[in-house]
Image 1 (cartoon, rainbow, N blue to C red):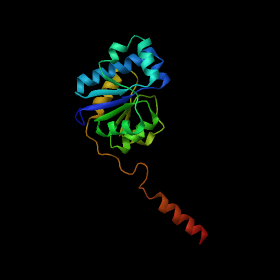
Image 2: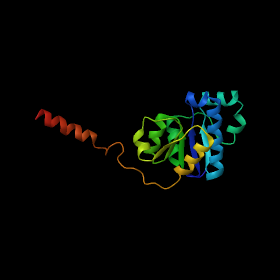
Image 3: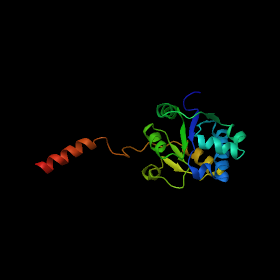
Image 4: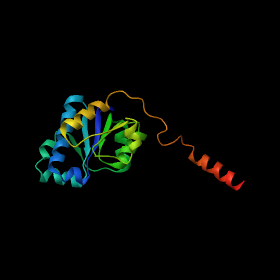
Length: 168
């Protein structure tokens, strides 16, 4: 699949997978996003998500996306780096997407990475089809990447200077 023509999604949080209404809404939203944006959804499936999709009779709906086996960290980041955007309920992947210069739709009620949502780089979405697809369309709108959200890379130098000042 050509870079930029797909999105990567990971859904594994219990409040999304164990709630039949939420899980259906998420996958309806992902399918709707494919139709509206032309971005194919690639989803490495967490074992819990796969099990819940099967238990809740949502496997056929989910198969309208491209379902992948779980993958390791490096493989997932390689996929993210070639994606148009990311959809996730993973705390870590939200931040990794930023480092990969990819915007992210976060399917959570809130996030520990408020600095990314405060800048508009990441967007929160409810686990409902209309909310998720609207946020995915919005995430494709051009936006300059916020710089130095996590500092300027000079923390070690600042620490050394501070210690030297203390020690005289």
